[in-house]
Image (cartoon, rainbow, N blue to C red; front, side, top):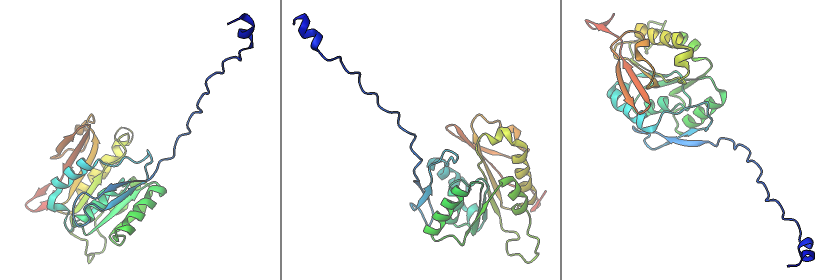
Length: 229
């Protein structure tokens, strides 16, 4: 090729750079009820990072351990997120459940799920701070004729893991309320990372199970001659 021909060549164009993709908005996804009357039915999950749903296999193990204790109980899902624990409890025979969730958006999805499953009358959704609500809901009924007197509690304490560092005292206050006020036959379940030191929880006969990077700690109110201590 001659020099003249070479000079007529067009300069090579730079490769087009792809524009950075904008972060896609989280899309609602579906979890499922693991067991009970509503087994296999969907639980709507909004997909946002501020909610960390419990993995299906861990949830299944949790309810296998609880067994018949759920039947007829009133369940408190203190940091509800998707409401999966409250909904699963109803599916497995709980009389009713209270789901406490700080996010209005997450609470709307819980309500959407309960309506689709036709259990909205059994799941009460409270929006706001779980620590404040605990002082109200985790207490003995004031009315001596209240039918809920003596009904066992199942309390799920599954907060964002960071709260075990930042709000440990407040979380322990919830545990202490349950151990003080819960009727006989009640169970509290605390979920934390495997690295969390269970010794930081209030003293008691904790039953700890580890699943990968997650640990579940179960405790029942202490009993003495059929009465709570």
